[in-house]
Length: 322
Image 1: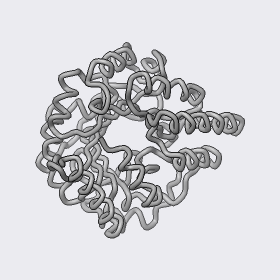
Image 2 (image 1 turned 30 degrees about the vertical axis):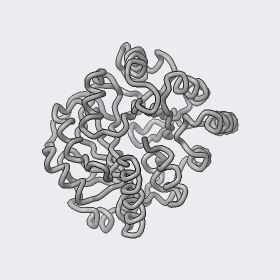
Image 3 (image 1 turned 180 degrees about the vertical axis):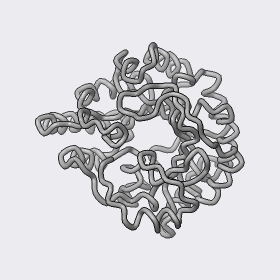
Image 4 (image 1 turned 120 degrees about the vertical axis):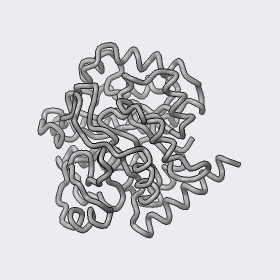
């Protein structure tokens, strides 16, 4: 009964938000501090910042009413009050669906279960290579082995609330089928997000024209794998748009301010984690930024999955719910 009520609540929230132009997903970047030094990211190390309290963040979440509330960063587990924040977001049998995105370095088995008990539905673990190359890329020695031990050490099957998230780039796209096999072997789902140069202004990780035809073949194999094993979250629609993004170098018609946006550590709003502003309300964000937004240089997972046609979005979303 609880699962049915929750699904109905999420369907209703998604439908209402579509009509009222409220966000499908809000990413709460609860800190910009990070314990990693990822090669594709501008963040890393401690940051002096004003942080809204768990109660304030919960109030913002209830005001914005997203279908999905994401706790992210930086590295969200650097906040000692992350469990309190999750509890503030949690509404028994009701929206939002709560996801925490983490590099996994601070995630222990105990912390995993504490997060689920606090109300987190899904733990999104960043993983960019199917082996120890991930350690160097993220700047954390031993990280791949830690993630492997953690995932294999927690509940299996439908109770394993882990999704691996891989950033697709020129250096790893040939390894994506191996990533899919790894996720299947570990008994978890796998989601893909396209690399953007907006973080570091480095175009080197974008796919070249010569690599795009090869990437199309990789995508075809991933879609076949998805159909067979149902362990890949990324839809065929998103893969198609990802190919277009790498071909063009841009993805026009960004819908930040309507379908998605970010909350900063201090509780103000930003268009995304790549363009930091300090808007007080969603209306202000839309009026002062979204109406004149011409940025087209990303196709991140949060954007890709909230900008899908609504019918496809609801269908894919229901498939993903645990």
